[in-house]
Image 1 (cartoon, one colour):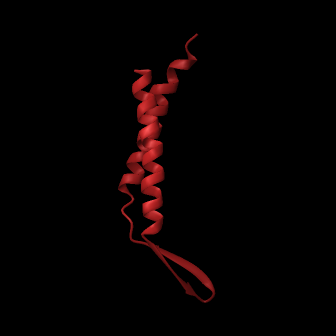
Image 2 (cartoon, helix red, strand yellow; image 1 turned 90 degrees about the vertical axis):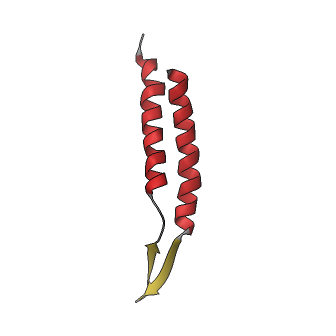
Length: 68
């Protein structure tokens, strides 16, 4: 079970990096009264799911280390 958690953790980290970069590239910015305003047209669902994979993987994979 610990190996499954570590795999979920790694897949989640990779997903956060890939989908996070993609989401940042899908945003547009414009200047209004000297302020840069960013408008995002990105789909944030894959980023949220990847974050959940990281969280679940950390709980499953690293929770077993507290047993002594």
